[in-house]
Length: 160
Image (cartoon, rainbow, N blue to C red):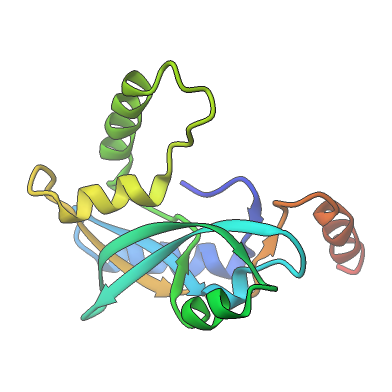
């Protein structure tokens, strides 16, 4: 599974595929990079921050409204790993948690189902037999989240 508002590059998928072939079939993976490298020049974004210990993901948290112009926020988060959501066996659990979320919140049209929070619930809960490894994405991610990003992407594509 991947986010629909980022372009990851071929190398990311090759690295993810290679890691999937190395891990157990019950292990999921996630690609990430330093949060500072995922931020647009303007506008606020949300990011899933990944907590890692001994090469395994031990937790995640969605951080809302990150703004590169907020120096205090950036200094606290810049070197954290942010995810871009490449997973394997996690999909069934995420599906179930999201369906439950929708049922509980069916009357709230403004609430957002936050994928990193669902994944974190799976990581820390004894209800799931869940392990997640990660890899660092080496190429630049091109974000298409904010208005005007499409112009930047068109320029990049035209230079290829």
